[in-house]
Image 1: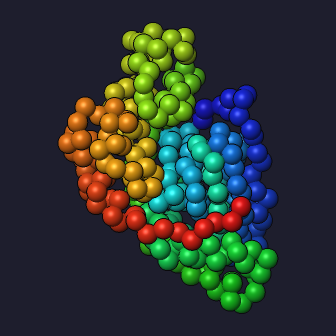
Image 2: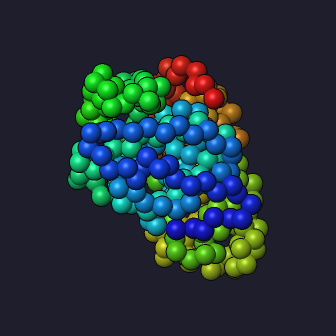
Image 3: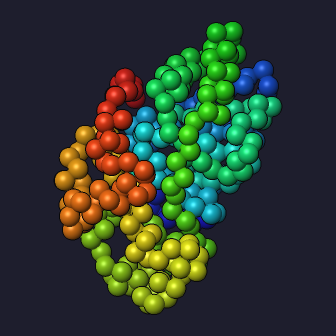
Length: 275
């Protein structure tokens, strides 16, 4: 897993993630984070449903990186080492499920899940009722949430990670520069490697070429922009596509629908989240 850079703020994980108590099926923890704030790499016995009600979150494991907009959540099974970073100002809502309630047992690793309106409302209500989660009504809502998590569709879109420190530093540069203005030559120089070395590392450690990896990252970056109502043409040109049609084609290949259809599906807005 890439190491944290010294200029970022490091936060500890929530204590609720380590509480084992079947009488409390679900525990919640809200956290508002500034951009470029990280949590220390960790694992915990409770499974975690991580959702940013506002903002974009990056979740990193040893195998992959997930860039998660507010239209999706991440399910992190208990015992899986991971690190969370806020890419923007983020209103984080975490729900921790006791290990006595197994969820998505067929899935061994982290998964990015499509959030439904019902799940959104359950999360907001449970977070709001944090102090009474052990009481009858709230406890039953928590059990409903557990059942609903099992039904959520997985979006199998992630960015493969690497082991080489130079590759991981370069990946961090890419993620922190969503408009992709830097060339490969410039990025390679930033991490003290040749272009040929970087191209070799991408292929060997991620299974993708540098160009393929950057293309996928660009497309994932568009999800939050589209949800916010950004025009498809503007998104395409901001992210460096030569034409709108090439952007639409690439988006449909990865996500199975056009940007317009995706934006229409996500045009329902959440109630305001209080800081």
